[in-house]
Length: 486
Image (cartoon, rainbow, N blue to C red; front, side, top):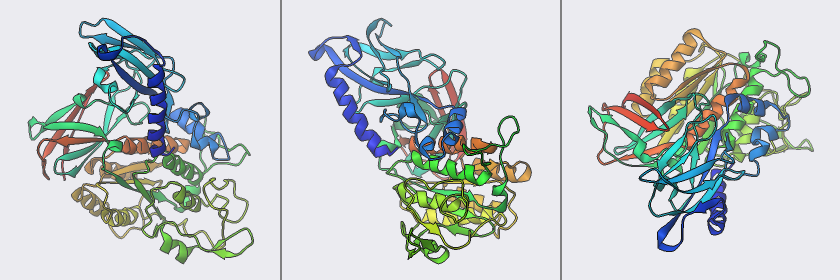
Protein backbone atom coordinates (compact mmCIF):
# COMPACT_ATOMS: atom_id res chain seq x y z
CA UNK A 1 0.00 0.00 0.00
CA UNK A 2 1.27 3.42 -0.86
CA UNK A 3 1.70 5.43 2.32
CA UNK A 4 0.76 8.74 0.67
CA UNK A 5 -2.52 7.25 -0.52
CA UNK A 6 -3.02 5.89 2.96
CA UNK A 7 -2.72 9.40 4.46
CA UNK A 8 -5.08 10.97 1.94
CA UNK A 9 -7.68 8.25 2.34
CA UNK A 10 -7.32 8.38 6.10
CA UNK A 11 -8.06 12.11 6.17
CA UNK A 12 -10.98 11.78 3.75
CA UNK A 13 -12.61 8.87 5.55
CA UNK A 14 -12.23 10.47 8.96
CA UNK A 15 -13.72 13.76 7.75
CA UNK A 16 -16.83 11.82 6.82
CA UNK A 17 -16.85 10.16 10.21
CA UNK A 18 -16.44 13.48 11.96
CA UNK A 19 -19.36 15.01 10.10
CA UNK A 20 -21.57 12.07 10.99
CA UNK A 21 -20.15 11.60 14.49
CA UNK A 22 -20.23 7.91 13.67
CA UNK A 23 -19.82 5.56 16.62
CA UNK A 24 -19.92 8.25 19.30
CA UNK A 25 -22.21 8.66 22.25
CA UNK A 26 -22.44 11.14 25.07
CA UNK A 27 -20.76 14.51 24.98
CA UNK A 28 -22.27 17.79 23.92
CA UNK A 29 -21.94 20.49 21.32
CA UNK A 30 -20.46 23.90 20.82
CA UNK A 31 -17.93 25.10 23.37
CA UNK A 32 -18.74 22.24 25.74
CA UNK A 33 -17.33 19.48 23.55
CA UNK A 34 -14.48 18.58 21.23
CA UNK A 35 -14.04 16.13 18.38
CA UNK A 36 -11.70 13.18 18.68
CA UNK A 37 -10.96 10.47 16.13
CA UNK A 38 -8.54 7.70 15.32
CA UNK A 39 -7.86 4.33 13.76
CA UNK A 40 -6.91 1.30 15.86
CA UNK A 41 -4.98 -1.55 14.24
CA UNK A 42 -3.43 -4.80 15.39
CA UNK A 43 -0.14 -6.16 14.01
CA UNK A 44 -0.28 -9.37 12.03
CA UNK A 45 1.46 -12.26 13.71
CA UNK A 46 4.52 -13.73 12.03
CA UNK A 47 2.53 -16.86 11.24
CA UNK A 48 -0.20 -14.87 9.48
CA UNK A 49 2.35 -12.89 7.47
CA UNK A 50 4.18 -16.06 6.43
CA UNK A 51 0.99 -17.86 5.45
CA UNK A 52 -0.27 -14.89 3.46
CA UNK A 53 3.01 -14.62 1.57
CA UNK A 54 2.71 -18.23 0.45
CA UNK A 55 -1.01 -18.76 0.01
CA UNK A 56 -1.33 -17.45 -3.53
CA UNK A 57 0.77 -17.96 -6.63
CA UNK A 58 -0.43 -14.83 -8.44
CA UNK A 59 1.11 -12.39 -5.89
CA UNK A 60 -2.27 -11.14 -4.68
CA UNK A 61 -1.75 -12.98 -1.43
CA UNK A 62 1.51 -11.14 -0.89
CA UNK A 63 -0.03 -7.74 -1.45
CA UNK A 64 -2.69 -7.56 1.27
CA UNK A 65 -5.02 -9.71 3.31
CA UNK A 66 -8.59 -9.75 2.01
CA UNK A 67 -9.96 -8.36 5.29
CA UNK A 68 -7.88 -5.20 4.99
CA UNK A 69 -8.06 -4.68 1.23
CA UNK A 70 -11.10 -2.42 1.67
CA UNK A 71 -9.74 -0.65 4.75
CA UNK A 72 -7.47 1.90 3.15
CA UNK A 73 -6.45 3.36 6.51
CA UNK A 74 -4.80 0.08 7.56
CA UNK A 75 -1.12 -0.20 6.62
CA UNK A 76 0.52 -3.32 5.22
CA UNK A 77 1.26 -5.86 7.95
CA UNK A 78 -1.63 -4.78 10.19
CA UNK A 79 -5.32 -5.61 10.52
CA UNK A 80 -8.18 -3.38 11.72
CA UNK A 81 -9.13 -3.61 15.38
CA UNK A 82 -12.90 -3.73 15.01
CA UNK A 83 -15.74 -3.56 17.58
CA UNK A 84 -13.57 -2.19 20.38
CA UNK A 85 -15.27 0.19 22.82
CA UNK A 86 -13.30 3.28 23.80
CA UNK A 87 -14.15 5.11 26.99
CA UNK A 88 -13.40 8.80 27.39
CA UNK A 89 -12.90 9.61 31.06
CA UNK A 90 -12.36 12.79 33.07
CA UNK A 91 -9.65 13.46 35.63
CA UNK A 92 -11.66 11.59 38.28
CA UNK A 93 -11.92 8.47 36.13
CA UNK A 94 -15.61 8.92 35.30
CA UNK A 95 -16.73 7.81 31.85
CA UNK A 96 -18.02 10.87 30.01
CA UNK A 97 -18.48 9.41 26.49
CA UNK A 98 -17.82 6.26 24.49
CA UNK A 99 -17.13 5.25 20.89
CA UNK A 100 -16.81 1.91 19.13
CA UNK A 101 -14.43 1.16 16.28
CA UNK A 102 -15.99 0.09 12.99
CA UNK A 103 -14.93 -2.80 10.75
CA UNK A 104 -11.90 -0.81 9.63
CA UNK A 105 -10.82 0.16 13.14
CA UNK A 106 -12.04 3.75 12.81
CA UNK A 107 -13.85 5.79 15.42
CA UNK A 108 -14.96 9.38 15.92
CA UNK A 109 -16.89 11.07 18.72
CA UNK A 110 -17.82 14.38 20.30
CA UNK A 111 -16.60 14.32 23.91
CA UNK A 112 -17.01 16.79 26.78
CA UNK A 113 -14.28 19.35 27.17
CA UNK A 114 -13.28 17.92 30.58
CA UNK A 115 -12.34 14.50 29.16
CA UNK A 116 -8.74 13.77 30.12
CA UNK A 117 -7.99 10.26 28.82
CA UNK A 118 -9.06 7.63 26.30
CA UNK A 119 -9.18 4.00 27.46
CA UNK A 120 -9.89 0.67 25.79
CA UNK A 121 -9.35 -2.98 26.70
CA UNK A 122 -9.08 -5.03 23.46
CA UNK A 123 -9.05 -8.79 23.95
CA UNK A 124 -5.58 -10.40 23.89
CA UNK A 125 -3.86 -6.99 23.74
CA UNK A 126 -2.53 -4.62 26.34
CA UNK A 127 -5.02 -1.93 27.41
CA UNK A 128 -4.96 1.48 25.79
CA UNK A 129 -4.82 4.37 28.28
CA UNK A 130 -3.58 7.60 26.75
CA UNK A 131 -4.01 11.33 27.14
CA UNK A 132 -7.00 12.54 25.12
CA UNK A 133 -4.68 14.84 23.14
CA UNK A 134 -3.44 11.74 21.30
CA UNK A 135 -6.78 11.56 19.47
CA UNK A 136 -7.51 15.30 19.34
CA UNK A 137 -5.14 16.10 16.48
CA UNK A 138 -6.52 17.49 13.22
CA UNK A 139 -5.43 14.32 11.39
CA UNK A 140 -6.94 11.16 12.92
CA UNK A 141 -4.34 9.27 14.90
CA UNK A 142 -3.25 5.80 13.81
CA UNK A 143 -2.48 3.62 16.85
CA UNK A 144 -1.46 -0.02 16.99
CA UNK A 145 -2.06 -2.26 19.98
CA UNK A 146 0.53 -4.50 21.61
CA UNK A 147 0.03 -8.24 22.24
CA UNK A 148 -0.55 -8.98 25.91
CA UNK A 149 2.57 -11.15 26.19
CA UNK A 150 4.82 -8.71 24.30
CA UNK A 151 7.46 -6.31 25.46
CA UNK A 152 8.91 -3.44 23.45
CA UNK A 153 12.14 -3.51 21.49
CA UNK A 154 14.04 -0.36 20.55
CA UNK A 155 15.18 -1.84 17.27
CA UNK A 156 17.32 1.07 16.12
CA UNK A 157 18.62 4.44 17.28
CA UNK A 158 20.20 6.74 14.70
CA UNK A 159 21.46 10.31 15.05
CA UNK A 160 20.24 12.06 11.89
CA UNK A 161 21.10 15.64 12.93
CA UNK A 162 22.84 17.20 15.92
CA UNK A 163 19.45 17.65 17.60
CA UNK A 164 17.50 14.70 16.14
CA UNK A 165 17.33 10.96 16.69
CA UNK A 166 15.46 8.45 14.54
CA UNK A 167 14.08 5.66 16.73
CA UNK A 168 12.42 2.39 15.73
CA UNK A 169 10.15 0.67 18.25
CA UNK A 170 8.77 -2.83 17.65
CA UNK A 171 7.04 -5.43 19.82
CA UNK A 172 8.77 -8.66 20.78
CA UNK A 173 6.02 -10.98 19.54
CA UNK A 174 5.31 -9.78 15.97
CA UNK A 175 8.50 -7.69 15.44
CA UNK A 176 6.33 -5.04 13.77
CA UNK A 177 6.39 -1.34 14.54
CA UNK A 178 4.45 -0.05 17.53
CA UNK A 179 2.54 2.85 15.97
CA UNK A 180 1.24 5.95 17.73
CA UNK A 181 3.32 6.03 20.91
CA UNK A 182 2.78 9.50 22.42
CA UNK A 183 5.78 11.75 22.83
CA UNK A 184 5.36 11.90 26.60
CA UNK A 185 6.22 8.18 26.74
CA UNK A 186 9.82 8.88 25.65
CA UNK A 187 12.56 9.72 28.12
CA UNK A 188 16.10 8.81 29.11
CA UNK A 189 19.51 10.30 29.65
CA UNK A 190 22.54 11.48 27.70
CA UNK A 191 25.85 11.14 29.53
CA UNK A 192 23.87 10.68 32.74
CA UNK A 193 21.79 13.85 32.38
CA UNK A 194 18.13 14.01 31.36
CA UNK A 195 17.61 13.64 27.63
CA UNK A 196 16.26 17.06 26.53
CA UNK A 197 13.30 15.92 24.40
CA UNK A 198 11.39 18.77 22.76
CA UNK A 199 8.96 16.74 20.64
CA UNK A 200 8.39 13.31 19.12
CA UNK A 201 6.82 12.87 15.67
CA UNK A 202 6.16 10.12 13.18
CA UNK A 203 8.69 10.20 10.35
CA UNK A 204 5.78 10.41 7.89
CA UNK A 205 4.90 13.84 9.31
CA UNK A 206 8.42 15.25 8.91
CA UNK A 207 10.78 15.96 6.00
CA UNK A 208 13.15 13.25 7.29
CA UNK A 209 13.02 10.88 4.30
CA UNK A 210 14.83 7.55 4.29
CA UNK A 211 17.19 5.94 1.80
CA UNK A 212 17.27 2.16 2.17
CA UNK A 213 19.47 -0.42 0.45
CA UNK A 214 18.30 -4.03 0.40
CA UNK A 215 21.30 -6.35 0.14
CA UNK A 216 20.14 -9.73 -1.23
CA UNK A 217 22.11 -12.98 -1.32
CA UNK A 218 22.00 -14.76 -4.72
CA UNK A 219 24.69 -17.36 -4.03
CA UNK A 220 24.27 -20.96 -5.12
CA UNK A 221 23.04 -22.10 -1.71
CA UNK A 222 19.93 -19.95 -2.12
CA UNK A 223 18.67 -22.74 -4.39
CA UNK A 224 18.35 -25.10 -1.41
CA UNK A 225 14.83 -26.28 -0.59
CA UNK A 226 12.89 -25.16 2.47
CA UNK A 227 10.59 -27.09 4.78
CA UNK A 228 7.53 -26.54 6.93
CA UNK A 229 7.27 -26.89 10.70
CA UNK A 230 7.03 -30.67 10.35
CA UNK A 231 10.20 -30.99 8.30
CA UNK A 232 8.33 -31.68 5.04
CA UNK A 233 9.19 -29.88 1.82
CA UNK A 234 7.29 -26.62 1.51
CA UNK A 235 5.44 -26.57 -1.82
CA UNK A 236 3.34 -24.03 -3.67
CA UNK A 237 -0.22 -24.47 -4.94
CA UNK A 238 1.07 -26.31 -7.99
CA UNK A 239 3.11 -28.78 -5.97
CA UNK A 240 6.45 -27.14 -6.84
CA UNK A 241 8.96 -27.08 -4.02
CA UNK A 242 9.94 -23.70 -2.65
CA UNK A 243 13.60 -22.84 -2.21
CA UNK A 244 15.36 -20.06 -0.34
CA UNK A 245 15.54 -17.76 -3.34
CA UNK A 246 11.83 -18.00 -4.11
CA UNK A 247 11.06 -17.22 -0.46
CA UNK A 248 13.54 -14.32 -0.46
CA UNK A 249 11.91 -12.82 -3.55
CA UNK A 250 8.49 -12.97 -1.91
CA UNK A 251 9.94 -11.38 1.22
CA UNK A 252 11.39 -8.55 -0.88
CA UNK A 253 8.07 -7.98 -2.65
CA UNK A 254 6.34 -7.95 0.74
CA UNK A 255 8.86 -5.38 1.94
CA UNK A 256 8.06 -3.15 -1.03
CA UNK A 257 4.32 -3.37 -0.34
CA UNK A 258 4.61 -1.11 2.70
CA UNK A 259 7.33 1.41 1.88
CA UNK A 260 6.52 5.09 2.17
CA UNK A 261 6.56 7.08 -1.11
CA UNK A 262 8.63 9.68 0.72
CA UNK A 263 11.42 7.12 1.05
CA UNK A 264 13.64 5.58 -1.62
CA UNK A 265 14.97 2.06 -2.00
CA UNK A 266 17.81 0.43 -3.93
CA UNK A 267 18.73 -3.25 -4.26
CA UNK A 268 22.22 -4.75 -4.25
CA UNK A 269 22.45 -8.41 -5.32
CA UNK A 270 25.53 -10.50 -4.62
CA UNK A 271 27.14 -13.90 -4.96
CA UNK A 272 30.95 -13.83 -5.20
CA UNK A 273 30.48 -10.62 -7.19
CA UNK A 274 28.38 -7.58 -6.31
CA UNK A 275 25.76 -5.83 -8.46
CA UNK A 276 23.94 -2.60 -7.69
CA UNK A 277 20.88 -2.92 -9.92
CA UNK A 278 20.65 0.34 -11.84
CA UNK A 279 20.19 1.36 -15.47
CA UNK A 280 23.86 0.89 -16.26
CA UNK A 281 23.97 -2.62 -14.83
CA UNK A 282 20.79 -3.61 -16.68
CA UNK A 283 22.19 -2.34 -19.99
CA UNK A 284 25.52 -4.07 -19.39
CA UNK A 285 24.38 -7.43 -18.00
CA UNK A 286 20.83 -8.06 -19.22
CA UNK A 287 19.38 -8.64 -22.65
CA UNK A 288 15.62 -8.26 -22.53
CA UNK A 289 13.08 -9.47 -25.06
CA UNK A 290 9.46 -8.45 -25.54
CA UNK A 291 6.64 -10.82 -26.53
CA UNK A 292 7.71 -10.58 -30.19
CA UNK A 293 11.27 -11.58 -29.40
CA UNK A 294 12.64 -8.10 -30.02
CA UNK A 295 15.44 -6.76 -27.86
CA UNK A 296 14.12 -3.81 -25.84
CA UNK A 297 15.70 -1.51 -23.23
CA UNK A 298 14.53 -1.20 -19.65
CA UNK A 299 15.40 1.79 -17.51
CA UNK A 300 14.11 2.80 -14.11
CA UNK A 301 16.89 4.63 -12.25
CA UNK A 302 20.38 5.88 -13.05
CA UNK A 303 21.27 5.72 -9.33
CA UNK A 304 19.48 2.44 -8.54
CA UNK A 305 17.21 4.22 -6.04
CA UNK A 306 13.47 4.50 -6.64
CA UNK A 307 10.66 5.94 -4.54
CA UNK A 308 7.92 4.11 -6.44
CA UNK A 309 7.91 0.41 -5.49
CA UNK A 310 6.52 -0.46 -8.92
CA UNK A 311 9.89 0.41 -10.44
CA UNK A 312 11.62 -2.16 -8.22
CA UNK A 313 9.34 -5.13 -8.94
CA UNK A 314 11.39 -5.85 -12.07
CA UNK A 315 14.56 -5.85 -9.96
CA UNK A 316 13.15 -8.36 -7.45
CA UNK A 317 11.85 -10.62 -10.22
CA UNK A 318 15.24 -10.44 -11.94
CA UNK A 319 16.92 -11.41 -8.67
CA UNK A 320 14.69 -14.50 -8.53
CA UNK A 321 16.02 -17.06 -11.02
CA UNK A 322 12.75 -18.94 -10.62
CA UNK A 323 10.56 -16.08 -11.88
CA UNK A 324 8.96 -15.98 -15.33
CA UNK A 325 11.42 -13.25 -16.31
CA UNK A 326 13.96 -16.00 -16.85
CA UNK A 327 13.51 -18.56 -19.66
CA UNK A 328 12.39 -22.11 -18.94
CA UNK A 329 9.73 -23.66 -16.77
CA UNK A 330 9.68 -21.02 -14.02
CA UNK A 331 7.23 -21.54 -11.14
CA UNK A 332 6.87 -17.88 -10.10
CA UNK A 333 4.89 -15.49 -12.32
CA UNK A 334 6.04 -11.93 -12.76
CA UNK A 335 4.74 -9.46 -10.25
CA UNK A 336 1.79 -7.53 -11.80
CA UNK A 337 3.93 -4.37 -11.92
CA UNK A 338 6.81 -6.12 -13.72
CA UNK A 339 6.75 -5.55 -17.50
CA UNK A 340 6.14 -8.55 -19.76
CA UNK A 341 9.77 -9.07 -20.67
CA UNK A 342 12.06 -12.09 -20.72
CA UNK A 343 15.80 -12.36 -20.07
CA UNK A 344 17.60 -13.73 -23.09
CA UNK A 345 20.97 -14.27 -21.42
CA UNK A 346 22.19 -16.40 -18.53
CA UNK A 347 21.44 -15.74 -14.88
CA UNK A 348 24.48 -13.73 -13.70
CA UNK A 349 24.70 -14.98 -10.11
CA UNK A 350 24.69 -18.32 -8.14
CA UNK A 351 28.35 -18.41 -7.13
CA UNK A 352 30.01 -17.87 -3.74
CA UNK A 353 29.24 -15.37 -0.96
CA UNK A 354 30.73 -11.86 -0.83
CA UNK A 355 28.46 -10.32 1.82
CA UNK A 356 31.03 -7.86 3.13
CA UNK A 357 31.85 -6.57 -0.36
CA UNK A 358 28.11 -6.14 -0.97
CA UNK A 359 27.75 -4.14 2.23
CA UNK A 360 30.77 -2.06 1.26
CA UNK A 361 29.04 -1.27 -2.06
CA UNK A 362 25.79 -0.44 -0.27
CA UNK A 363 27.61 1.95 2.04
CA UNK A 364 29.27 3.72 -0.89
CA UNK A 365 26.02 4.35 -2.73
CA UNK A 366 23.95 5.27 0.30
CA UNK A 367 26.45 7.80 1.60
CA UNK A 368 25.90 9.84 -1.55
CA UNK A 369 22.15 10.18 -0.94
CA UNK A 370 20.70 13.38 0.50
CA UNK A 371 18.18 11.70 2.80
CA UNK A 372 18.74 12.15 6.50
CA UNK A 373 17.80 8.56 7.39
CA UNK A 374 20.20 6.12 5.71
CA UNK A 375 19.57 2.42 6.44
CA UNK A 376 20.87 -0.90 5.10
CA UNK A 377 18.99 -4.22 5.32
CA UNK A 378 21.16 -7.26 4.53
CA UNK A 379 20.18 -10.91 4.11
CA UNK A 380 22.55 -13.86 3.63
CA UNK A 381 22.38 -17.63 4.01
CA UNK A 382 26.11 -18.39 4.09
CA UNK A 383 29.47 -17.53 5.57
CA UNK A 384 31.36 -14.91 3.61
CA UNK A 385 33.96 -16.68 1.48
CA UNK A 386 34.75 -14.23 -1.31
CA UNK A 387 35.02 -10.64 -0.02
CA UNK A 388 38.04 -8.40 -0.32
CA UNK A 389 36.94 -6.21 2.60
CA UNK A 390 36.46 -7.48 6.14
CA UNK A 391 33.49 -7.42 8.48
CA UNK A 392 35.43 -5.04 10.72
CA UNK A 393 35.95 -2.58 7.86
CA UNK A 394 32.23 -2.64 7.09
CA UNK A 395 31.26 -2.07 10.72
CA UNK A 396 33.68 0.81 11.16
CA UNK A 397 32.47 2.50 7.98
CA UNK A 398 28.80 2.09 8.87
CA UNK A 399 29.18 3.08 12.52
CA UNK A 400 31.42 6.02 11.64
CA UNK A 401 28.74 7.40 9.33
CA UNK A 402 25.79 6.63 11.61
CA UNK A 403 24.26 4.07 9.21
CA UNK A 404 22.42 1.20 10.91
CA UNK A 405 22.70 -2.23 9.27
CA UNK A 406 19.79 -4.58 9.92
CA UNK A 407 21.08 -8.10 9.34
CA UNK A 408 19.08 -11.25 8.60
CA UNK A 409 20.87 -14.58 8.92
CA UNK A 410 18.84 -16.97 6.79
CA UNK A 411 19.51 -20.64 7.55
CA UNK A 412 22.80 -19.46 8.98
CA UNK A 413 24.34 -20.04 12.40
CA UNK A 414 27.82 -20.21 13.89
CA UNK A 415 30.50 -17.67 13.03
CA UNK A 416 28.65 -16.24 10.02
CA UNK A 417 25.54 -15.45 12.05
CA UNK A 418 27.68 -14.12 14.90
CA UNK A 419 29.40 -11.70 12.52
CA UNK A 420 26.04 -10.48 11.22
CA UNK A 421 24.72 -10.03 14.75
CA UNK A 422 27.77 -7.99 15.71
CA UNK A 423 27.26 -5.75 12.68
CA UNK A 424 23.72 -4.97 13.75
CA UNK A 425 24.64 -4.36 17.39
CA UNK A 426 27.61 -2.12 16.65
CA UNK A 427 25.63 -0.02 14.17
CA UNK A 428 22.70 0.38 16.62
CA UNK A 429 20.30 -1.75 14.56
CA UNK A 430 18.78 -5.25 14.99
CA UNK A 431 19.64 -8.83 14.04
CA UNK A 432 17.27 -11.59 12.91
CA UNK A 433 17.98 -15.31 12.66
CA UNK A 434 15.28 -17.04 10.59
CA UNK A 435 14.61 -20.19 8.62
CA UNK A 436 12.38 -21.30 5.78
CA UNK A 437 9.28 -19.15 5.10
CA UNK A 438 9.73 -16.96 8.21
CA UNK A 439 11.95 -14.63 6.16
CA UNK A 440 8.83 -12.79 4.94
CA UNK A 441 7.80 -11.83 8.47
CA UNK A 442 11.31 -10.60 9.28
CA UNK A 443 11.40 -8.37 6.20
CA UNK A 444 7.96 -6.93 6.85
CA UNK A 445 8.85 -6.23 10.47
CA UNK A 446 11.94 -4.29 9.40
CA UNK A 447 9.96 -2.39 6.78
CA UNK A 448 7.23 -1.35 9.22
CA UNK A 449 9.85 -0.11 11.65
CA UNK A 450 11.37 2.14 8.99
CA UNK A 451 8.04 3.49 7.72
CA UNK A 452 6.75 4.23 11.22
CA UNK A 453 9.99 5.45 12.75
CA UNK A 454 9.87 8.15 15.43
CA UNK A 455 11.79 11.41 15.01
CA UNK A 456 12.88 12.64 18.43
CA UNK A 457 13.80 16.34 18.39
CA UNK A 458 16.00 17.55 21.26
CA UNK A 459 16.28 20.95 22.90
CA UNK A 460 20.03 20.76 22.51
CA UNK A 461 22.32 18.74 20.31
CA UNK A 462 24.10 15.49 21.02
CA UNK A 463 27.53 14.65 19.70
CA UNK A 464 29.61 11.74 18.54
CA UNK A 465 30.69 9.67 21.54
CA UNK A 466 27.72 10.66 23.70
CA UNK A 467 26.15 7.81 25.66
CA UNK A 468 22.39 7.83 25.17
CA UNK A 469 20.07 5.75 27.33
CA UNK A 470 16.65 5.99 25.67
CA UNK A 471 13.59 4.74 27.53
CA UNK A 472 9.93 4.29 26.61
CA UNK A 473 6.97 3.74 28.95
CA UNK A 474 3.73 2.92 27.19
CA UNK A 475 0.82 0.46 27.45
CA UNK A 476 2.15 -0.90 30.72
CA UNK A 477 5.53 -1.71 29.17
CA UNK A 478 8.89 -0.13 29.88
CA UNK A 479 11.99 -0.64 27.76
CA UNK A 480 15.35 1.07 27.35
CA UNK A 481 18.36 0.82 25.08
CA UNK A 482 21.81 2.18 25.64
CA UNK A 483 23.96 3.26 22.68
CA UNK A 484 27.06 5.31 22.09
CA UNK A 485 26.48 7.69 19.21
CA UNK A 486 28.94 7.38 16.31
